[in-house]
Length: 269
Image 1 (cartoon, helix red, strand yellow):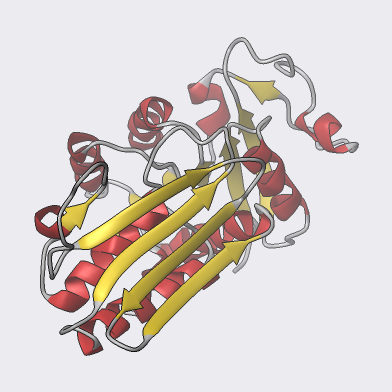
Image 2: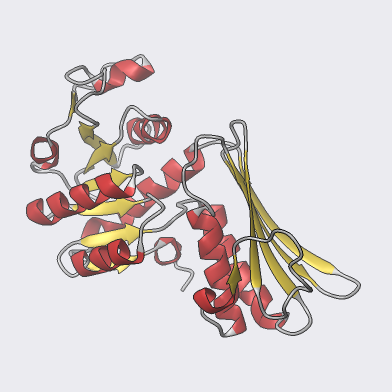
């Protein structure tokens, strides 16, 4: 690849931030260039490596312009409101962006699409290599089992997750809908309560579970008469998302603009 890719990590003091730091420190093709966090963060002004018991030479800052100066790529797993600010700054500085944040509105997604005309972006609700493969498998399964099978998406995450269904569950639903030749917004069922009547054919249902410290479990059930197919992915560590995101960062090394997802990164299109 030549010179190491200069990486900035947003939300560097969080759980995903720590996983990303570990990933960058372990990869000779990457170098930590900046570490961003909120202005009220207790680690502000200190070496970001202290959180992992090492010296990195990079201090935690809240000033986006300082962090992005001369950087190659920003990796962001924060919140939509923060991501929009980071996105604008990346365009200003010509910095590539990896967006693993979930919970964006339709309008915010359009802003991301527009920004990709100026900078290169990998935008995916789940950076896991396994989940990316699962998305492809779900689309294929829905295409084959397109008559007489009911599709349900079940997901579980830790008690601190704030959006539901998860971005990954929605992406799996989109994949199933594509396999059926439908648009998810026309066939999704997000809640059931009371006397709902019989299940309507062609709908894609979602069930959301929250509790404990579950990193992320997703199952797509295709239930027919006399049999059912279940496609499942279980994440036991945030390292899988971090490693996928850093793989995506390297994928963007030679790209100046464009909107990509993990299927592009893995060559699954």
